[in-house]
Image (cartoon, rainbow, N blue to C red; front, side):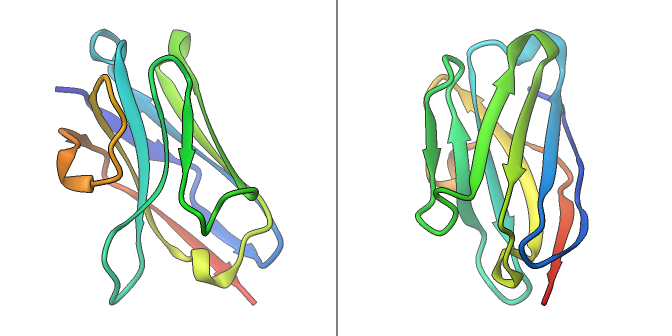
Length: 122
């Protein structure tokens, strides 16, 4: 299984930016699709963005135009650049991995990181 570690969360004012990173184990990253999910207090986990191993990207409507997912396969790392942040973006953000294809369903991912807190103030 892929080992994943997220970083880059923090506190930011509305309209600001954060860049999250997810580092994966070297031998298992190739040919995996990567996804970002988030969960706010009292709400269900929701899909944010995903990227295939060939770098096709997918976004939730709520973040389209504001967030950008990317990956550096040589560094075994996936990123989530978050711009124009809103208080509604406050959540624990987690990265996840599954073999080959993207899924919008969190239950279809086989590996998960511990998560990183993103808090956006008014």
